[in-house]
Amino acid sequence: MGSRPSKDRRGPNAHAVLLDTEDSNGPLTMESIRYVLVSLYDYPSRGPGDCAIRVGERLNILSDEGEWFKVSSSATGNESYIPSNYTAKLYNRWQFVGLSKRKSEELLMLPHNQPGSFLIRESETFPGNYTLSVRKSGSQERASVKHYRISCIDNGWFYISPGLTFRTLSDMIAHYSVSDGLCCTLGEPCFIIGSNNVPVVNGAPPVAVKRPTINWKDVDSSMIFSQTKEGAEDSLVSEGLKEAINSYLYMTEKCEDCCQLWET
Image (cartoon, rainbow, N blue to C red; front, side, top):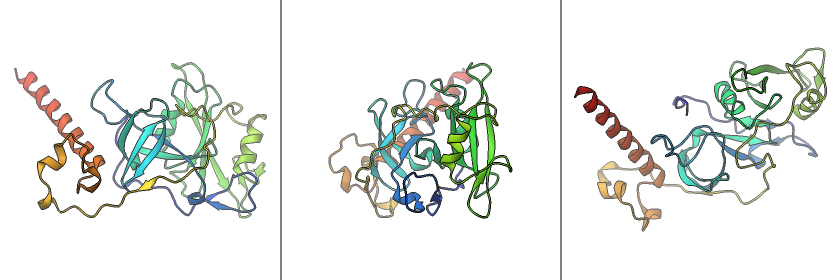
């Protein structure tokens, strides 16, 4: 669902500070906090009803291969390889890292969300600032998403309206959950399929798999098209790369079939 991300998309800022963690004695880096991984695309896109992973699902990382993750869906249990930039990180149930404006609207427009469903993401227009995105209407026909720029002043406090500042993003969310000032009062955080909006439980980090740079002269077709899993861990070609090549060839064959039908 949706177009693919561009190659020059900026990744999450590893040095960003998580300012809204409760009960902390000081700022914590994003790297030190556990997060939920969320799918931003249907994948692989081989046609209707043939996707292992759906947009908006919570994912469990089984292995980390850098540009690829092997994941399982918390909603369906399906396993698949997926490009790492087809996902976003979610902290504290509502703070996203690696989420664009367009994708925030797509997530908030999913059926489980209601008026007041919200999320906070990094601002694309004003680097270093945040944006609060809020679903305005419940009916699918009239639903829309309103975006509010969150600014930060010199003392580190946040505001949407200059006359009302907050020490943390959590304080801001708590205020607008019971008070006017936005298009509607804030309700539940954006619903993530398979999570039931339960905060992630700390656990062991995923296994990182480091593979050497591929010399394509050493690769033959059996490494790419073999269906057996035997020796996969020692193969020069990762399962994620094999999946990408096979998906590309599948779509290419479909396009050629369409062209032949059109010509006849």
